[in-house]
Image (cartoon, rainbow, N blue to C red; front, side, top):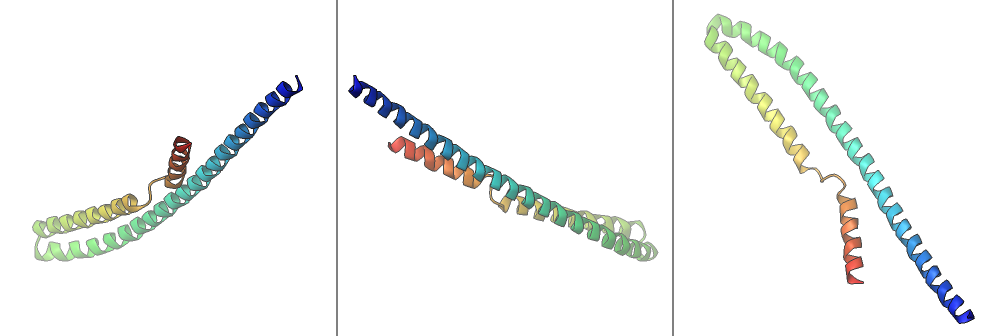
Length: 128
């Protein structure tokens, strides 16, 4: 009977250790997820800050420049000059938006480290 009790205790001890290991693995993955979430939040805030600064400065510069150019063009080219000026301003805005889009796409995908760790864990579990 003692042998059976010791054998049962061995199984329970093994199950307890497996459970503790799984909880530790889940905790470490959750901590990694939390760190990456913080990094993504900071990256987004930084991007939004620089986008806001660029838009503010660009708008101020464009308004002053376009206003001065519009007055000059009105005197020399009339409506055609103002239309050309508007097209140039729209093309510049499109170029800026494409640059911001490229910057967003070139960044690392969100939670890449967490996904990679889960893939490694899955591969390790499949091997065993």
